[in-house]
Length: 246
Image (tube, rainbow, N blue to C red; front, side):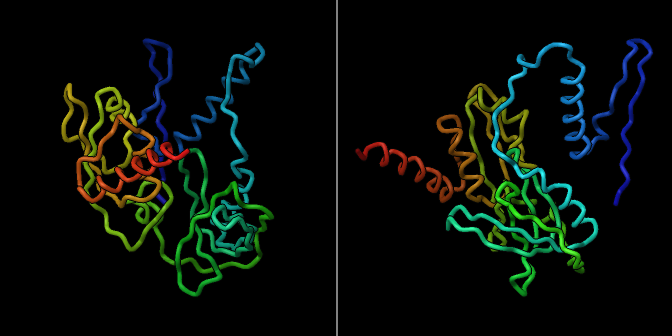
């Protein structure tokens, strides 16, 4: 593992401390966000009614401690997992490799022991129950989760697909948000003027990415490739059909 240090500089002129943000990785930034939130609430002497939190369902964060322990110590874990599509709960014993966050939800990346071939599957923590760390250890295969998801948006990984260049046009208002919060690490700005923002992405378009585009509705347009442009267009045509049906 690469050791990372967090540098905090004292500025005598302003009597303040400054953090070098260029040295902070994703984990440190996430932990600091949580720390600042807890400290802000704890230091307030008034009722916390003025802080309005979003009501969220259970996210399965109670399993994080056990999963981190299992990953670090190369231990098998077993659990029951609810599948939305089939509306059933199945028992799984897996080799845990990594944890991935997406849209404020956490997912376990693991090799299911049911199959003989090594294949990483994704399990949403909020659909796990009866979690049990096993005493049995396993010998991990070489696996790099960051590299594995390099060309994907979200948690769907289509190994058989090749990444393609996708060009998107946003109106000027939405484009400002996209510049501040890039959609993907491959994002490159092709044009930015009064007519809007055009970006290029290099990834495998999955269902997660489809939904991201559709959620922007009339503020984004797929410019290329033509086949993917028609694919996204079909979502809107299907939606119109549903509204036309009484």
